Image (tube, rainbow, N blue to C red; front, side):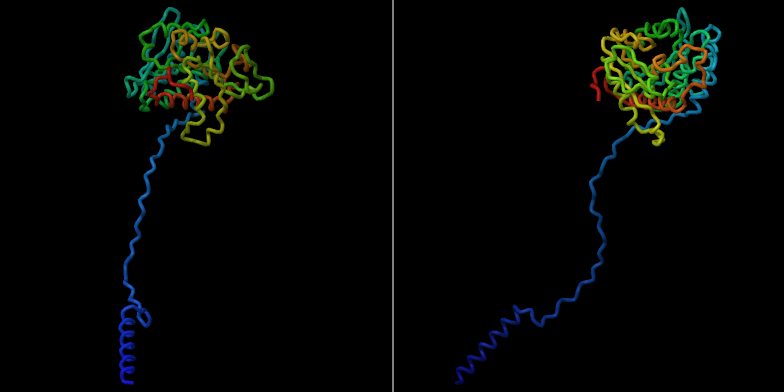
Length: 350
């Protein structure tokens, strides 16, 4: 009996020892440690913001002021001299150093702002400044002069890889004489990457049937309303046209203004315009025949406006909203081209 009692006591002692080692019953949980938790920010991957060229915003008032100041016939020698005085005075105010370049029948005006990359070819922006007799030429071509002067104001002090050149051609109405004289200096063409030529960019019409088209166009016309800006370029230099196709995508400093920009009809012209002679009627054509890329920016002239080469081509006929939008498109495209380092002759269109 005693053996059983001793055996029972031994069993109970063994259970007690094992229980003290492995059981959690009646065990108080450990007191919580006081830990000051400092929030640690999880490092986020750095996202590199895409650099966007912001095109400066054109001034409607400045554009229209130029047209008002040029509201006179610019046909005779004296009248064209007065026009040159106005243009060169405005350029000097903006810090440019314009040069007068004489040729047998007239005088061109040339100025340039050097870019940061000497290997990158220049971009030229130009327009003719003469008129036919008896017309004050508000649209033809005070509108083009005004936009070139606005480019001079907005981009003259801007640092860009490419050099910006400005040209004002004389005697366009006499047969493209000024631009022919300009491109005859072949040495200057070696460093010229492309030219943007404006000839009538201030008129729009919004009624059905007011827009006409020449035969043989390489694209389908968008409408029979004259509410678009046409840009014609030779097919050997399509990147110039691409800049205008993308011109409405480039932000300006007043983004809400973008809504008023007209649509752009780009016309890739094959065979240097031999099949479409209507596309050879302005100062871009001599550049084409020298192998230099050039685009003509226009409201399509007599295919749209009833005031073409008339005494009625006065400032009051300029369509303010269209003109401002057209100028902004030119500034946007010029800004984009000045920033490019690629060869504009071989770069494929976007």
